[in-house]
Length: 184
Image 1 (tube, rainbow, N blue to C red):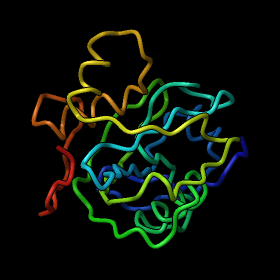
Image 2: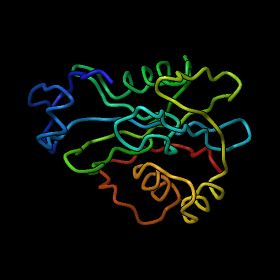
Image 3: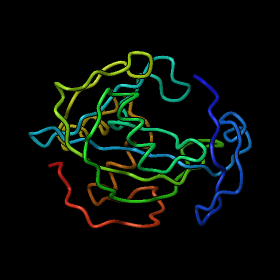
């Protein structure tokens, strides 16, 4: 995994400077990220199984897309880049759902934006270097799998599913956006 340059931000999401990803995580600096929930035409959530070489949660289920926001990049641009890099998708209309702050793990503090959109799973051409597999599940199936403990989930996917379902989560919500949820 390349050591990308990230913006370091304050609690108001204002850029303070730039650091390499490795330094950001090693020093516990607040930075930005994005996630996307893609609904299939039948209302299921398209999830990825993270690549085996990922430094966190290898082979765990994750959002449709999860990305760091690179230095100088906006949330939406990072989301669109992630769609292309991870799933080979372009021109997917996205709607912001929530902006939140969360600790992803030791030294990994992020302010993130969650988007939702709709995509046909047949159009997905995932990058096997980043993604092991892609599948779709109903929210109920995912919640059952998470409770069952037999399938590994990224911690943030569990928290985002909890928030999305109206259950308690570790997300510190900074802003919600009016949007029609497409998963069911």
